[in-house]
Image (cartoon, rainbow, N blue to C red; front, side, top):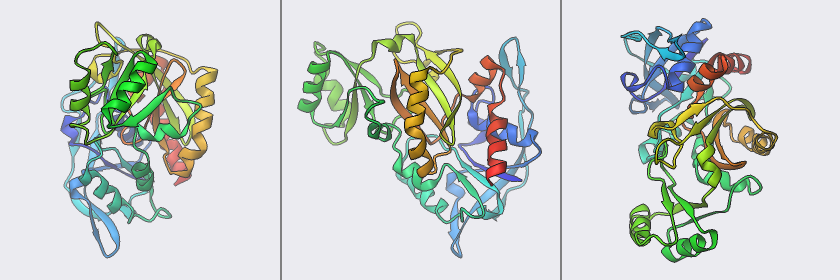
Length: 320
């Protein structure tokens, strides 16, 4: 089979961490062709989506003393070719957020891939529907107390009722721009003004969960089913557990409460074509649903001696 990956520039990826590399590697190991491209090379002609695709050959990472180690160079690119995406059996849309206007335009181009011929992961209409912060709001039994607003007084009222809160930009990633709010903080007005761009952009505000110091659990879902998890624990004085800001990763198990949350999400994820998803759970509460380029496979594989990338590729082979 032929697998295409729409990714950020490959030279910027970390082969020992990035899930996109793990998925490409798994497809290659299982005997499939792997091609890569970027959103700025997508096009539509004659009613079909195309891209400037390059074949890539990867040298898989190896586990040495508990760490993934890559050779240098770890990839080799072939000559680029303009090809219709329907010539591929599966296309992964794995460009990192934020979901900008060019990103949205790329999903419109992917609408011109015939799903009867090629599986797009995740479905472009599903990505558009699933802002990674807002999407969780529909699962009211799973989330902590949450509001979305750009009104300073509304945010102030929520904060005073909750005692402490977290403010998040709706388009952020990897913990970027997340702030801790305390009712007594004299910087409150400035923090809200900066986060909302002077009241022009709404933000998410959630009650602070003290269990965050014990970890922010990432659970990987494949077609709505949990296949692995890793706990990300804050270090030093940092309250965020995201790996991108230095969070320590630890082996973990999926609790009954977390399985119940996965069950709540599964029908909606399947309806929206969101096949490969990473959800974040703190203290038994769903905080985010990550659909653009969820990560965590490398850490789960390393800690649990798994090969989740191969599991994903095998599922796609059966589906496609």
